[in-house]
Length: 115
Length: 113
Image 1: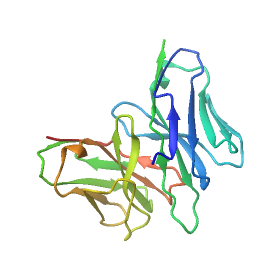
Image 2 (image 1 turned 90 degrees about the vertical axis):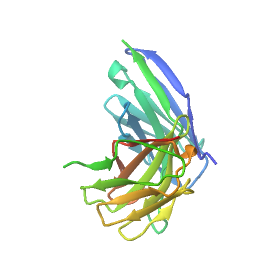
Image 3 (image 1 turned 180 degrees about the vertical axis):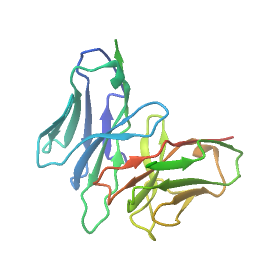
Image 4 (image 1 turned 45 degrees about the vertical axis):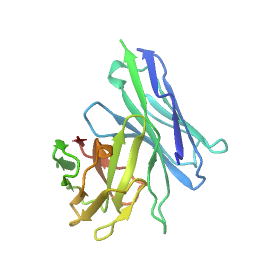
């Protein structure tokens, strides 16, 4: 059962464009939503994360938008650069507490930014 | 400070052979994880260890075993490799549970023929 659905599978933009990657989740117990960035031959690395008490979080050129009622969240990359070309994964986890939360990943989006 | 290290980087096995993937972290993290990554499937959790001395199954545990040797080390064993286990395997760690940043190793690319 895929609890986090990510789209699109691949995305090509020109330098300066604003790619948007979308994720939808089913489990209402999720309350931590990170995005991971992965370059070829490397392990994923945390890019930005949000908790549902806010609807938007911005770090540099990267912004997460979160819609709790729709159970959707998205990543926007402003002024995209060729160096942003990578695979991006959304993920979701229940919070801490008495039950141990496990991270569920989306399927990934391969982003290519042309110069 | 090396972060999360994994050995080996590459491995080719024949069907039925066994092997152990090693993982170590030097960040004094409590939790450690093993994932597999397959095209179009994202990362799927195989096993995790919430703290030293505990291990538990993730989404795809069949065909694997794990050992949390101490706080630093978490190994993944394939007892009888199958072609369906051809994948890239990542180890990760976090200071506490999954609602904290996970730090990933560089991965092991395993091919089973």
